[in-house]
Amino acid sequence: MEWTLSPFTIYLGVKGKLKNINHHNYFLGNNFNEYADTIFKTGVSPQKPYYYVNVSSKSNPESAPEGCENIFILCPVPDLRHKPDWSDTNTLADNIISDLSKRIDFDLEANTLTKTILNPVDWQDKFNLYRGSGLGLAHGLNQIGGLRPANKDEVFNNLYYVGASTLPGTGLPIVVISSRLVTERIEKDHAGI
Ligand SMILES: Cc1cc2nc3c(=O)[nH]c(=O)nc-3n(C[C@H](O)[C@H](O)[C@H](O)COP(=O)(O)OP(=O)(O)OC[C@H]3O[C@@H](n4cnc5c(N)ncnc54)[C@H](O)[C@@H]3O)c2cc1C
Image (tube, rainbow, N blue to C red; front, side, top):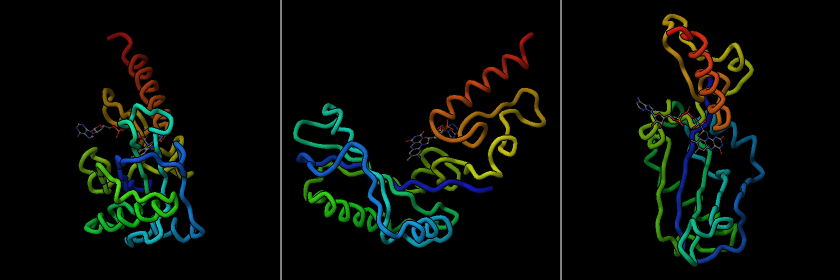
């Protein structure tokens, strides 16, 4: 089966207001194909990472103390099948923070008040995510619809599955639909009980 990428996430609380950034931001380079190939097929730590940045304090000032901002950085990286060793976590985080500092012309390192980093091992251990795969089973053509693991067990009549790696698929709105489908199915299958 094919699995989705792993998240490498950084959570920063910084002193100062950031001018050159929005609530939602994507920082991409000109090596997209090379990068996508790297993270899905090899264990090499991404040298020029692509990443998404969310600064919710831009829209919701109450989510950070006055005069400060909160920053969430999400970088897609190889999962634990391809890269089991994350001893370079701090190096990768420093690369990303340094790159972002240059792009927004703000010294994040010097103004950091709090910093939390989660690598694929953390995501696996904290949430039991298989091999640290952030979104569960991938949505390739051979893993959707009737080809995706079903919500009901094939052997046990009273065992049901809900969530990202079952039907209909991954992502918050979709797993909510999954829970509704399972609920409806249980009610239908066991109506008389
Ligand atoms: C970094 C990141 C960013 C994302 N961003 C988005 C986004 O912007 N939009 C979007 O739609 N989706 C996003 N997703 C995907 C979305 O979060 C998942 O698809 C969704 O949360 C899956 O829901 P779930 O209920 O299947 O699993 P989960 O949300 O993983 O919930 C499973 C729960 O079960 C617990 N658990 C696991 N094993 C056990 C056990 N043995 N015993 C007891 N408890 C257990 C876990 O701790 C967890 O709390 C993101 C995912 C990640 C990792």
